[in-house]
Image 1 (cartoon, one colour):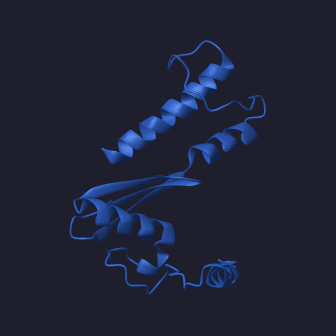
Image 2 (cartoon, one colour):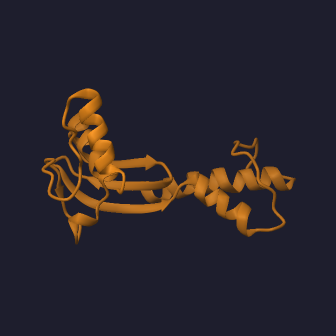
Length: 139
């Protein structure tokens, strides 16, 4: 947020256009049904606008980033809300940083869910646990 003014000026200067900065008060065609619509992040609003423009049906929009966001949007462009979870990298970093005896591992899909060594067990828990989280929330 602190860099937005500089970024806006750079875009104007470099491309000769006025960028549209999505935030509170910008009309997008999405009817935000949040208790306080100003709380909805611009990333979630932009995702909803793009998804509605492309599909025009009831949707669950999932954005896998630093945080993983799940948003419910109706075919009539009503943004019903959703949930926010830590992204897989943040979740795994928390495990690595807080469990002193566990090593940092690469995020790779192991061959099995039930594993016979610490590294594969961690990979299984991180990857399949994350998949389970997504499936549970979507269902």
